Image (cartoon, rainbow over all chains, first blue to last red; front, side, top):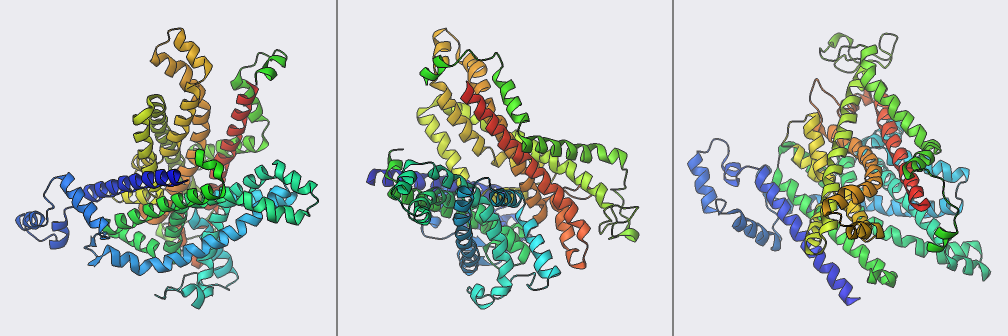
Length: 315
Length: 294
């Protein structure tokens, strides 16, 4: 077990290092020199060159990468010259609201997808299963923003019971203080996530249903409910743990679109606005953080699976 | 495994590919998917020749007209006929989806084959590169890249293709690794076949199934991805259009009740993505069958 953990930790560290190299190269290749960004378009070329020399931006790429890496290790993600604010502050300001939105959607999605998948596997090929499969297939083939627009059309414009825009409050806990204004964003993100999870959950549950231990449990005389909740559910959830780890990039991408559509002030909207400002330090800072979260998510998922299922450690 | 092989009667002399085609044709969803794709391709590429509309010069007088006899799907804010606009947008969306998928598959197949054949340290390094790129959220990196290019069919295809070859690379590598250790490759080596011959005559034809299945899913994903880029403002520029840009233009008029700007084009988008997913699922099943019967 220790060897497995150490090996996974080492590969994760290598991957994070690789990501930092990519974000550095993109930062360097896409944005102009920091001197130009700080001093503005009116500054003379000499002044820009002097600034770059003074701060080490004229040195070789390797040296600059080491400087960048040193900053990162001290937790410094860079500086947004457009917003005149450090990337750390910008991300920290918005992270809470995004965590609430994405977290609520993730919890809801798991809560819906797990029972849904088990239900579909147990009642496989019934009308209900086919209907749900068709429904998730449509949702799976739909870009996030289209689902958002459909929900806005039905609940905001048609029925008029929910606002079409997310709450603009700067509070992190707006989900609790203004739940109505957050329902559509959360539902949209939940919808696409459920569509992604429930297909896997159905096939994972189907795989488990065919196993011998289910037959043994039934032969012992356990009720269907006990077999499903005590035996099937636990084992059928393991593939989902891996899937949740892997789906972090998709969840963050969905969050980006949902925040842009509903104008919810979080990391996604910050990223969207930074795209239009070509504010690369913010864009790549968030990308780096998102990538590290992805790596950590995968690592955590693998460790949970390894602890729950010792067979995987040899793989 | 060997027992069943000897006990089985002499199989009919049908090629594996023909069996695959047969089982594909028996899958109703697959046939439906192919039908939808053919219909939409005809609609987008042949349609404009039969249903000629003005798509270059704006016509402010007839902007935002609801559907009527002259404009079956109404007009948009610039006065363009929406039905004709969907055809024009569909051309770009389908082209980008296909180009991006082909680029990704070409890079991924090559990369995966090299990694799988090289093995050892080279393989290890190449796969860590894939792991690294896979941990960067696809939409993020594609959007950042898109800020630096003027959007054309070619540039969007290149951007999407350049960042979506990772999944096919992994698939092909796994396939090459498993094929490499099979008896027929050893037999070919013993017979004195060169490395190049083994790659071109044995490995690539056998890995082709996985690659073809993957292309279908890649097209579906790329069409969704380009719609996201278009929706977020990085789509084609006027007078060109693709479905994502069209939808984002329509959003502004959703609150004025201009439903015809959204639902027809949204429907086409979902339909074509679903169709490619149907075909991909069916292809995967039929190629599995092919492997099982062999």
